[in-house]
Amino acid sequence: MGDIRFLLNGQPMVLENPDPTLTVLDWLREAKHLTGTKEGCNEGDCGACSVSLAAMEDGRLVHRAVNSCILFLPHLHGKSLTTVEGISPNGKLHPVQQAMVEHHGSQCGFCTPGIVMSLYAAHREGRQDHNDVLAGNLCRCTGYVPIQRAAEAAAKQPQPEFFDEAAALQNLTLTNDAIDGAYLPTDLDDFANWYVKNPNATLIAGATEVGLEVTKALKDLTNLAFLNRLDALKTIANDDNGIRIGAGVTLSQLRSAMVGKHTDFVEMLRRFGSVQVRNTGTIGGNIANGSPIADSPPALIAMGASITLRRGDKQREILLEDFYLSYGVQDRQPGEFVESLFIPNQPDTVGIYKISKRFDQDISAVCGGFSITIENDKITNSIIAFGGMAATSKRAKTVEAALNGQPWSEATIKAAMQKFADDFTPLSDVRGTADYRLKIVQNLLWRYWLARNGTSANVLAEVAK
Ligand SMILES: Cc1cc2nc3c(=O)[nH]c(=O)nc-3n(C[C@H](O)[C@H](O)[C@H](O)COP(=O)(O)OP(=O)(O)OC[C@H]3O[C@@H](n4cnc5c(N)ncnc54)[C@H](O)[C@@H]3O)c2cc1C
Ligand code: FES
Ligand code: FES
Image (cartoon, rainbow, N blue to C red; front, side, top):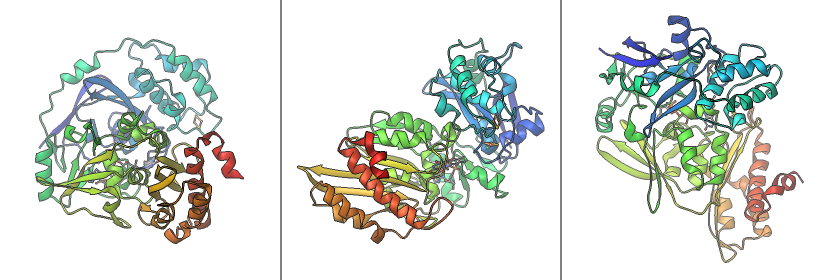
């Protein structure tokens, strides 16, 4: 019925009706015998399977490192895939490979191709934030210092000559919007009508959640719709009242759009998964998935965000906090999808804190969002929301009530901190006990108080007292 077309290391590929849930990693290794790309965890954590995926974004070719183990073949349609075998086309090592050799960055060897591909994508984009770039490539043998030295050295080297990737991409003729078992729409209205008729279909955006259903839960997913070709879901628009973000905007793109608007949100997104996860995972997927430990919902609820849901040609806008009804249940009708998110303009005083055992790429024990409005030293409004404290992302309404109308003072904050136990009965699990979680949320309110009063540099020392 159809095919998918993309570039593999510069060569045009046409795959007739591939299995739509075959991962790019399995295809590379088993069909193409390109075994430089390794399988470590098969769930997006370790980065051993990293490859570069390039596509046009706002008229510019952008290279992004992605985890091929949880990416499906249809995600490649119309894009340029580069593996470690494709970065030294003239037989000469790429600058990042040469630097890895010179700085002894290749250690166990198994992780090296993935590390090289993360550095390759970063080098193509001129990135200097080597720590963040490498956060999704886990090394357990010796450490990152030689790899970081290699990254710094490579960043000083110019781009080698490559083929004209943008022109080669434009020469790909994409005629299909479906293959057997999967719909790959490009028109939002067509998709919206199709979904009304196929309400049991599985929607796939970045697949950083859905991918694991295949690779870990070994589910056979049928009747799929891939949302990643719907440009109408990828728009970011500012107006006088705020910013509207399409559900298909990736977490990397969202982070860029938030720079200068929400300092803490940008910082939290730096610790959301890894570069690879953020390059494919979407904000719509994070919201729609409805996990009680998802990081963006508590932050966005504190910012007063709303979402637009769409079914056919009907749209409705609701506050994000009203979307989450109970564990695993959202206010979403059959055939209805998340179309966009709206964040109203506000001062950059929203506090967002992600608490996890490991700094980078870890699931939160608790993630909190704090928005407190102060007028004439009095609290006129407060929104405080958490993930990791209940079966859904949830507001601390008793604490908010204890704050509203009170003076902005240490006594008010200390009194309100005692009220969290009335709002939450958290679980004990591997990420933290119930007592630990309650203590955290109390201390986070104290941290917010210190940060609002300009003592953020001393926050951790204060909290530790
Ligand atoms: C290694 C790793 C680290 C991670 N780290 C974090 C983290 O730090 N914080 C965190 O919160 N999450 C984390 N995640 C989870 C995941 O990356 C996010 O939830 C991400 O935003 C999901 O987006 P996606 O586009 O990949 O969703 P998908 O996997 O494509 O879809 C997720 C769900 O949402 C549905 N869906 C997708 N788009 C829509 C839409 N527009 N309308 C309706 N339904 C839709 C799908 O049908 C599916 O049920 C991590 C995942 C991995 C693998
Ligand atoms: S194999 Fe570990 S991230 Fe893909
Ligand atoms: S480079 Fe593989 S574990 Fe360190």
